[in-house]
Structure formats: structure tokens, C-alpha cells
Length: 182
Image (spheres, rainbow, N blue to C red):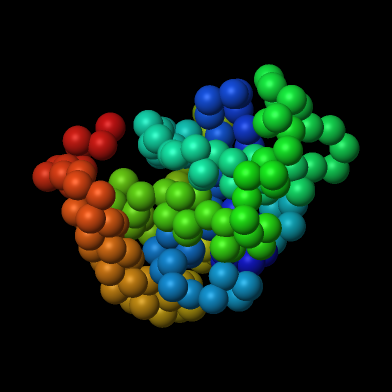
């Protein structure tokens, strides 16, 4: 996931799909998605907080078809479906270009549910520890991270307001408190 806008889709079962999005893209969704993210490393140590997976979002049928099309085009060898017609999502699509077939909000996490954390520390029972900032730098107060953080704080707040506006247009009431999400 070296590009900021890269998303990874994992179908979990017939009703659920896990979509991983780079934090930089969540914080600044208007950035060029083809730009390299800060500090990409291959096969490096990483941490993932399972408690922060956003659950409970419902998507419409056209978004499901778009995701199925993306999964089919990305498949290396096999695909499967409960019904034969589900194997051909492209028959229901007017547009085949991925960025055009699905709204950017459909695959991304709700930024209102995302905390603006700046680092993670973990310790083991043997006394060892591991820590990085949100960009994977082992130097928690990295100057490049500080600069990015200042930019992303503003764009992150704007992204949250955009989601509030989207909820208003769809007739949904945004929760008054972040705890309402969990």
C-alpha cells in the first residue's frame, strides 16, 4: 500500500467486506490518491488496532455490484458466488472504470469515527517495547510527521464536516457524540 489512495478489500463472507484505507487518505481525502504515502515500507513491522474497525455501515445494491466488479477484476485465479448471475457484475454496470463506478465515500471509513492519534506504543511481557508515530516512523516526533500532521488536521476537520453534510442530504441525523457510533 505505497500509494495514499490504495484500498485493500477483503471479502469476509456473503454479507461483509473489510476495506482497509491508508490513514493519510482518511485524514486528507482530497489529496492526489496516486501520491506516495509517507514512509512506505515493505515487509516492515506494523500494528493494527482491531477495536477501531468501523462496523455497521449498510451500502446499496449498486455499491455491492461495484465492489464485486473490483474484486473480480483483481482476482488472480478464482471467484465464487451464491448465484451464477453474481459472477458477472459487469453486466449491471454502465461504467467499468473503478473510480467512476463507486463513490469515494462508499469504500472509505467515516472520519467522524476515526481518532486523530499521533502514535502507538506497545510493550511485551519480556520487557521489550515497540512504538511508531502514525506514519510508521520510529522517531515519534519526526519533523516530517509534524508538518504532515498540521496539514492533515485541517483537512480532517473538513472531511468530517463533509460527512455531516452528506448525512443531512440523505436525511440522516449525525450522532451528537462519538460514543453513539460504537
